[in-house]
Amino acid sequence: MKLSDKTREVLLGPLNANNPVVVQVLGICSALAVTVQLKPALVMGIAVTIIVAMSNVIISLLRNTIPMRIRIIVQLVVVAALVTLVSEVLKAFAYDVAMQLSVYIGLIITNCILMGRLEAFAMSNNVGDSLLDGLGNGLGYAIILIIVAFFRELLGSGTLMGFQVVPQWCFEHGYVNNGMMMMPAMALILVGCIIWVHRSINKEEKK
Amino acid sequence: MKKIDTNSNVYTIIYATVMVVIVALLLAVVSSALKPKQEANKELDRKKQVLSSLNLNLKEIKDVDAKYAELISEQQINGKQVLVATLEDGSKKYIIRMDGAGLWGAIWGYIALNDDKNTIYGTYFNHESETPGLGGEITTRNFQERFNNKHIHSALGYLVEIVKGEATGEQVQAISGATITSKGVETMINTTLAEYADFLQDNTEVPTVATEKCCTCTCPCCVDTCKCGENDACVEGCDCQCCKKDEGCCPKCQKSCAKQNAE
Image 1 (cartoon, rainbow over the protein chains, first blue to last red):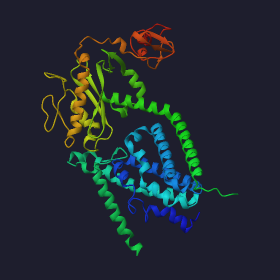
Image 2 (image 1 turned 45 degrees about the vertical axis):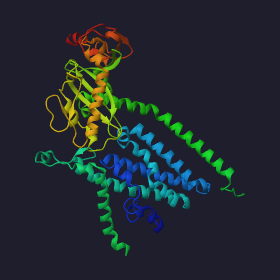
Image 3 (image 1 turned 90 degrees about the vertical axis):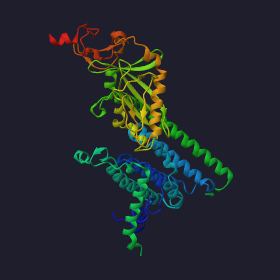
Image 4 (image 1 turned 135 degrees about the horizontal axis):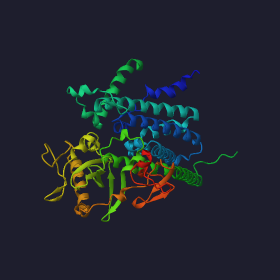
């Protein structure tokens, strides 16, 4: 299947050139909070992708019926309902991860990416495009989370997905995990580094 | 078709009402459908925490429910709830649940005491929202093992002392950079132990008989399931661990399983 230029732009744009985290700098708060380990970051990325895509579809379906004066409230209710659903499902089927993510699942409601996409895209585009836009933005967010979590877990705990990666003899020869990586501040610095790399790669394209 | 005015007040109010009712119904249905599964998860998590306070490696335990049922019985002693664990080597441990406050939110844990009610056998701590890498370190085995073999009886009552820097004697070393969380752990342990003072002073033996619990296995004598109730009395319908021990157990064959196996 060949994607048309517009579809390609809608789906793949947020992954790189128009990434919600590193370009629009949205959703930073949760990106800092859940990236100490790879597993919760992965679950968070999947959860946000599902919620953005579904709420985009729902709002896009309803877009002609929503009264303009309460449209933000309607968007909030849809997002809040979906977030509650995801949180309940996680508690039932992935209890450990749900506990690790604790309040941050609930705080997806306040993730700017969601409201931003609903207001800017889903309110004025058809269902198919909205779904792709939601998936694209969710995945764009997830990618950054996974990159940050990869480095934080590797350098901060010496593990990946909970498995020991840095061999034991390194510790015996004086290698120490970087405790700084466990702090939210380091996540911000990592996001900064990613933005730096991203900008220098994309500099030529923009001209 | 006449186009509805989506900006009229009546439309707005009806729209909002219908939307809220639909969403509320949906959430109520999902919540009640998933409730049993969530409760089961919570219970399993609690059992894992208790087992963890006995220095057991949770990764090696395949069936947490069975292990919990095998080792632990919940008892009311002097009006307080105490978990009594009988380990595989026959030694008895008392496990007490603790609740307290850390720096940002609630902390909780379990403390396991030897049957002298003085020596700490193991601990487990967890937290809601302590800082990762600092206060969050209370969940690590490294911190929890610092309490092992310390004694809670002191001249001042039932105390565990957590100190900054080098710990000597009965002191426990705090986590550097997490003074408030460490203090919170100390306060939590000491207030809980103070509440349990009656139990800790009482040196009368807790009858071991009652520590047997109904659990699951199949009686090898008559290949039937049996259940042990209070004082090891057997009840039909459930299976029990006591089949594995030397006592006669199964209500049908009344035989000792060990003897049966020897025959």
